[in-house]
Length: 278
Image (cartoon, rainbow, N blue to C red):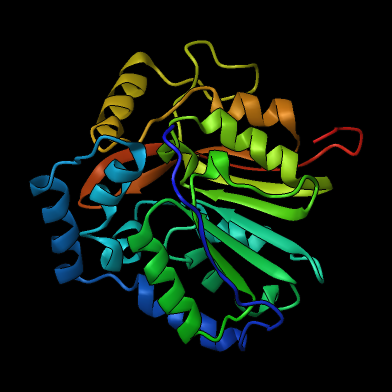
């Protein structure tokens, strides 16, 4: 993956504003609207993804829809709120949201993460980070740092983070395995990783896991691949190999404006083993 420069904005020492303020902001950001949906759909149909590097292609994809991102995808990216609602935020801890986008996860957590020392938002799209900075600022979030960076090349000390989340971001990272390796390296022993994303099963799924047929595997791989969203049958295998799973479920979620269509996604929560070395 092509490297990119890293920029950081500090907001240390503060706490998140009251939970109801964050919740109100989150609701406003995700409220469905026909006009918003039409803008996103028009951008997807009429603006092909361009760029020589992954960073350029990512910004090409998101720049024209950043402000409408949450409204449209709230009905497509299932399990995000459920994941955040299930997580604990340790006092004086550090949360790294990798592929943070517009900051929706932080707004969802609201006052529950007010005791964190730092919240690290990492994303490769400046348009999405600009939205995150604006929304979190309006919600009174002052303990956040914003990193414009390639997740696989993000510089963070080993065993310095208590919680890592990937919310529909692993499929946007070509070298996703490096992103998981980085998460494992920066997590403290006993630290938690939470992931929710689209996927397809392996041709021969592991015992006890859902088996997708050839048509489902092929259709969704090509459907999402058109927008440089790369579904993989190996995400869940690597997550189970690197972490002790405390929660894992495989599901089908509705697709906006396609009432009979369901896209496969998974939710994974795990911990870093105390005996592992970063």
